[in-house]
Length: 507
Ligand SMILES: NC(=O)c1ccc[n+]([C@@H]2O[C@H](COP(=O)([O-])OP(=O)(O)OC[C@H]3O[C@@H](n4cnc5c(N)ncnc54)[C@H](O)[C@@H]3O)[C@@H](O)[C@H]2O)c1
Image (cartoon, rainbow, N blue to C red; front, side, top):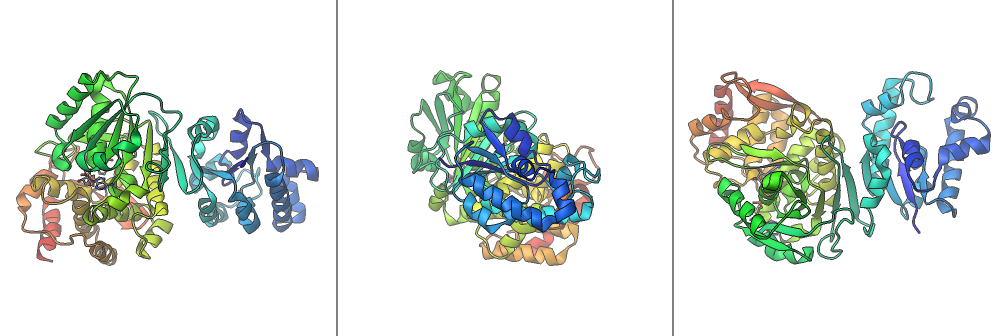
């Protein structure tokens, strides 16, 4: 039986997780200390890091191969060894994730308790250098804040036939849930989480429903709406609520949102409000939904006046993203999703931005999972959009206004986001970055110019932006200083947005 192995940087809670689990577990650091008869700090102090790494590699390889407890917590640096990384290929690897600041706090950096947590700069560099290695071997990513919930994570992994699936544990104040991302999850594996029980009522549109509805059987009821943004209305919500009532759906049942972001938002909103809230599962089938909209629990519908103006925060019980479903997605829809990939890469910076600039396709499983992870990290810290999460609205002040002013019919949401990024990067003033983004969008055949558009109507719609809390105080937008450095709370004057949009009309 393959072992389950906990990896992660110091302070991530590997020993805590192993200790609290009901599964018999072994902690490699403890075995090293017991065999050497001295604490790791002392091995470092007397013999040096290199000597410690050799002992660590030897003991880790031996324990990975030995009979005995199935759950193993390995030292933070064990993955530096190529032999250990190779041996981990046969295991289920769970990465307890920390960002550097959190890791420093959790190790009480500078307190003299850990040999490698003394100098904050060296600590950060070490963290950044290791991150790609953890990422390379991980099957499952769990935030360090949930190191005490390992048994829930393990339960959610039941029935998952390992290879090629990345599972993310989404944490939020109102509830946690598993996110499964991989090719074939739906169609070939017919995977359904063992922890999410209830009769399934599938809400879908004619495309996703026809192509993938069958893979979700057994189904208690099917509810179909017409495809497209025009279905994100109060009238369509009423249709879904009534169908749920007619099908006798109770709080023990599950709504399954099968489709793109429109279905996820509409079905999620209906689940949030039907009988004051029932559970739902997101099964995203567009790139846009797999990299963005399926996560984070924002659900809602549009008003003719403004987009996403009525809604609720309601976290899903699980997300099942089968990247194989993207094979049937029309090219324009794939491109629309790519705009959200570029947005997320600008927010994340680092390797995601590098890979996107190097030409990574949006539908590569690593890109999808890394976009999802980027969003979930923000939602964990700010579920209700009171600060940090707002950076996810990069490009969206302009995008939502363009969509509303054109009756939600001229541009796909993703296309509007691409245009919105160009307008808001102009407001931020980094011409080189704007040029780079323009090239990426154009290479994916996304619009980089605005067709004849009523700029007054766009500005009137922008004035209704939900981020705006003080009437008349300018238009709030998210400022991208450079990839990886994005701040919310910037304000533009209406004439500045008008100029930025006007330029897109002329381009
Ligand atoms: N809740 C959030 O956090 C959030 C975030 C971003 C965007 N959104 C919302 O998402 C919506 C846009 O989502 P979208 O771009 O997925 O649009 P969409 O849901 O309209 O889907 C696009 C088209 O693709 C079709 N389709 C879906 N899956 C398919 C498949 N596998 N094969 C073939 N055709 C398929 C659909 O029928 C539709 O015609 C917008 O309303 C936007 O506001 C929400």
